[in-house]
Amino acid sequence: MRLGVDFGGTKIEAALLDSTGEIQVRERVPNPGSYEAAVRAVADLTARIEAQAGARAAAVGFAVPGSLSPATGLMRNANSVWLNGKPFVQDLQAVLARPVRLENDANCFALSEAIDGAAAGARVVFGVIMGTGCGGGVVVDRKVVTGANGIAGEWGHTPLPWPRADEAPVRDWCGRMGCLEQWLSGTGFKRWAGMSAREADEKAQAGDAHARVQLDLLADRVARSLAIVIDILDPDVIVFGGGVSNVESLYPSVRGKLLAHIFSDVLHTKVVKNQHGDSSGVRGAAWLFTAEEVA
Image 1 (cartoon, one colour):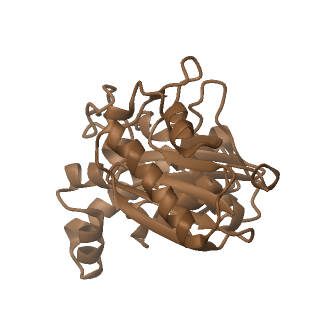
Image 2 (tube, one colour):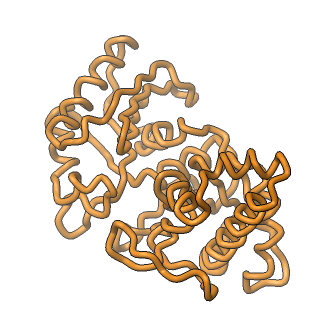
């Protein structure tokens, strides 16, 4: 059995997967929002679902906001800022009494979709999350690429490419200016469009011209931002996740705008919606260990 935990800012979800990748037991609880309480909540949650399944996993994978610093082994870059600077992996291993592996939640999303989701069979996959925040994950040959500094795929904290006169950079929670998170996340879209992506989609379908303009602006900004990824990584598939990914009109619109921004005369990269939805984080976390490691 594989055990994955999606450690989100507002909720913690755990799931046990069988050898075929099917979820056997899952449970979600609120994230208490403080470090010690969150570690205890994880221990209690994993104990409950393993008791329900009558099985104990050999290791536990975690999808987390932020990442581990290669220099210190401590958490960093998490928008749940109370995690930063904490020995999260060490404390989890202590309470769970088994090996633990942590990966950025966008990496886990990309891994889940690359293994048996919307990008199954593709060699190079870039996973995009546009939800409360904005991030990216890179998977090559069904393995997460973290990079020399542990920040591969940190797309959400790169600046908006080719900004126009009306796209003045905004300071992000991370302290940097002009991050994509302020433009492409669901939170960012609401900031500059004055409505949620879902509201804009519903209004556009009802014929609202202003909403259509806002969604077209979003598609243009997404296309410019992904063009840089394609120029550098040239992925086979780009998979969208997060609440913004539910705007169906975004896919043909982004595809139609990409070619004008990439350094190529052809575009073979597929841009697709996720298959596993909210389950991708916990599923990707469960896939962080190989079959041999969890046997």
